[in-house]
Length: 129
Image (cartoon, rainbow, N blue to C red; front, top):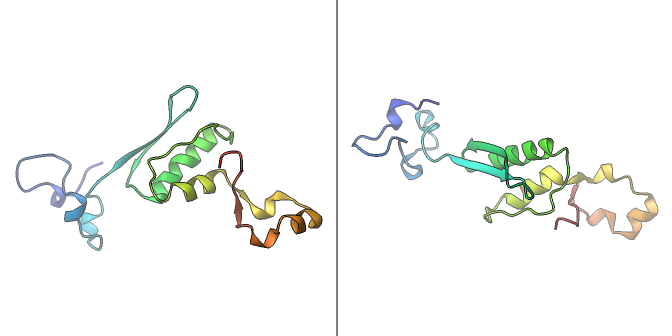
């Protein structure tokens, strides 16, 4: 991926261009500048890199990595999920592995017994929590 010449440093040094603090988020020329991250999801048993995704450190990029892992693992919930405590991690994992409340197919009696109205729109399996 080539970066605009504007991102190139004005003095000799690293070739990655501007750092995040020197980028203007409202400037279209700065959109390709700044930090990019390797989001790598490993298979917990094999330790293989299953889903590497390169991009900005955003919830969208993290979700892309988790959805790719979900697809490659046929939706099987891993026995272990660890993160670096990045703030959006919990919501990203819940989005990838959660079940929509309407898809749970509970009877009215079951809904009444579990305080159905207080449940979030997406149910997260208790086994991983």
